[in-house]
Image (cartoon, rainbow, N blue to C red; front, side):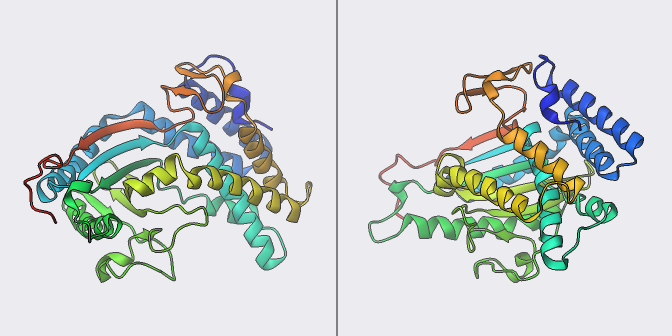
Length: 332
């Protein structure tokens, strides 16, 4: 069985690793008549296309930048950042194999049997976040009276922004996608027209404590999907450096082990292969990796200049509250 780990020690670039891994998976798929490996190879080709043909990102980021300018004019008292990223190779590989585990586990739990290859393959056409942008807002303390709550004020602006975003980007060539969540539990602050678009992890946080609003768009100019996440600074800190980051990783490992316990080795070859690939990546010592433009002293001290482990940055915009140091500005 071929794994991504087999390609991480030769000093190659991420793009060359992707090309070799995808090609070898395709050859194995043809040789063994394995539609899952073929789907895996085609998934990697999507990432290759993004890395090889980045000119569309210029158009995409320029149109999203118009919303940045709208926010700067509409909310001069807010500080905020816009950040974009292409999902890193290791994160993408983990997610692909994680989807296989989750689908087979849930299918077996519900029906008492394993799905066939066609059913598994069909479930893998659900990746919408290879390209993602994050909007993080913050209300400086100087704009809040002692009687007001920063958290409540920030939530108010968070949902205001969320309600404007779909129509604003639709006018610029993006089509918002339905969230696909049948029993939506969204905030009353989301308008009726927008509730079906958002995955509202603010109203219903993940078990790790993670909070954010997620919405997916299809870019009709670039012919690809992109995800936008909207958070407050506190939500962003929790996700990036706080409990949600660490606990989420630990919980994911526990859930994978629980799935393995339910489906013993040898019962479902597709599950076995996805599980082995996932575990190898989770146990990877990043300091031993030899990938061009990547360096790690350990699994915490990492300089990733190529998008192997951390998303490659697309656009950075930062708006500092225009009046945050002006004591004469009236409180909100």
